[in-house]
Image 1: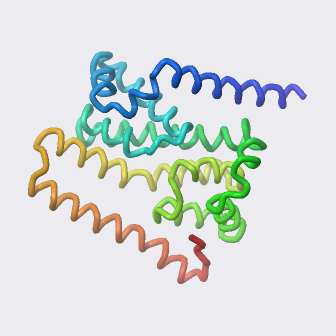
Image 2 (image 1 turned 45 degrees about the vertical axis):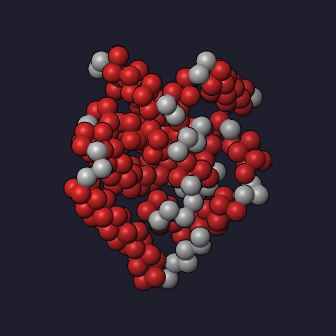
Image 3 (image 1 turned 180 degrees about the vertical axis):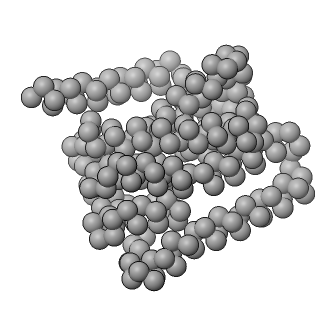
Length: 223
């Protein structure tokens, strides 16, 4: 009984925090690049922590990840920005997963049980285990933030989810942060065009790896 009350309490704490952040306009800053950048820069080194917390909140509220990631590249530079964004993405996706599994599982199931993406992920994990997680992280078949909640209600282990998600997030964090930093410093140039073309080819080949692996293993990948 105490454990159940504790879960309910944590859920409402998260819900009230989200409502308060929205009420006071904090979440709006995530969509206003200039305001968000100015906020981070005004706090100096503390801006790193503020950014990571903002990324975690955006993941829980399913704000598109690229919006927050490109800010990191602009504010912190291409390499440090990619690293800071990766930390925020890892912690944010983990928080959403744990919220789905331990805090608001029944609510998540009730809201999303009829959604096709959730059904496909649940079936995929049941048949193929953590291999299916690798596929959906590298092949953009389902919205990334929705996957965090979907995997929380499957039987996949958090350790596997954490490791696989952490590794598969690296390419996108690097690409978004570098692209944003390059545009901010030099604008749209021929160099940027070749970088985007090269990055696109790398991501394309990365997306083919799980498909080839699936074919060899005889795993059916349901989109």
